[in-house]
Length: 192
Image (cartoon, rainbow, N blue to C red; front, side, top):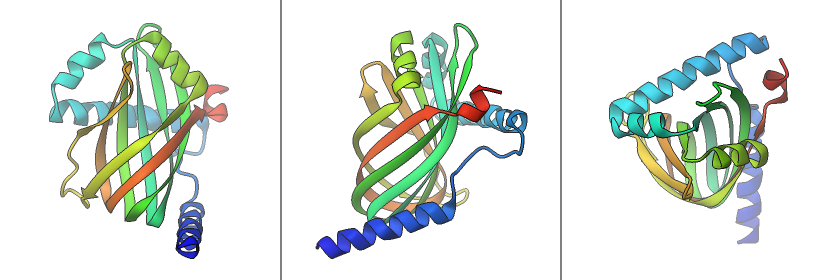
């Protein structure tokens, strides 16, 4: 059993490294910021089209975050990364961020998904920007590819002050994992 877990972790690490660090398209920081802005609007429009109640929640929130994530699950291990932005709706300030995740659980596949976090308090948003940790169980069963599927769902509350919604963009995955995710500020884009 130890050998299977070790092989799974090794395969996931290889897949993660081979995929490279997922980052916003563009060469310059300004090009990357433009692409993240387009992602931000596309994700919100897509989520609101699937659940109009999200618009009301966004309008009432002090801030929100949008992320693009890609994860690879190989037998007993999951690894992934992505990028996004936190928007303070009171000040219009944007904080660009990166993310990485790792998990253990049965599965096989690659999943490309978008995530919307709605912060119910300014403290929750600021804590997320400064600390960036989300640790929790994530049970997921997705089998979508291209334009087939891609249904929005509530992934859960990481606390009572944050709601998370996800929509699958493309990919094929069937998994039940316990995932830890780390979010941190993107030094390149925030210092530009």
